[in-house]
Length: 102
Length: 151
Image (cartoon, rainbow over the protein chains, first blue to last red):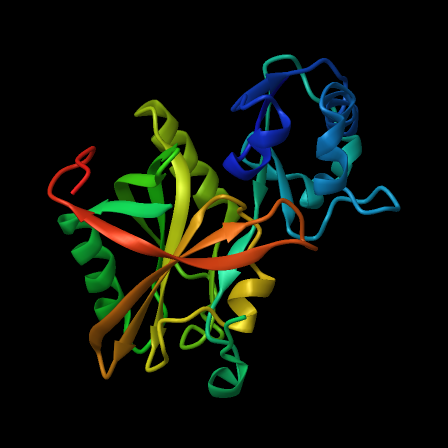
């Protein structure tokens, strides 16, 4: 399967935007990705092995978290995984007090 | 490091903030990361999914982001940053912006929109490589006449 790497994580994939890996499930694909590029591990997973909350993984057009089998979902060689960190922000609820710059 | 952006794209992201006022606008900067900073070749408007609190929060759905990334790659472009507006608040990053920033190496552009009119626009480069060492660093916005020009 092909795994699309977002710009901030390409520093850990030798600048590759896509990485080809073998694996029968989403988890197997991610494991193969981390095996090939070990520095990615801490950026994708927490210490207990769960995907970080701000890291989204899509199997083609589906959010893996919402698939019935989640990371155990089966994948074929033609499938595409996309890792995409979340993008959000804003002034916040108490913006006038929360504004900061350090 | 500077953010290189055309006058047209710069104006367009500021106008976006005026159009969505009093809600926050958001969008994506496509282009190339170079040694002298991120060069913007195109901006893409995105929807703000935070309809529950759009006056002070923004969020781009991951699926929309993936579609923008796909379209960008067809043109040989990468995501090099994002923009959003701060309605009636300064063009400085907030604690919320910082906590939600995960695109290292990318530029976060913020425009203050005061009473419906775009005021200041600032750019902040997210440096670092992890959640522990990340930092926002303000960088100069270099307005170019055309994509690829230096000034």
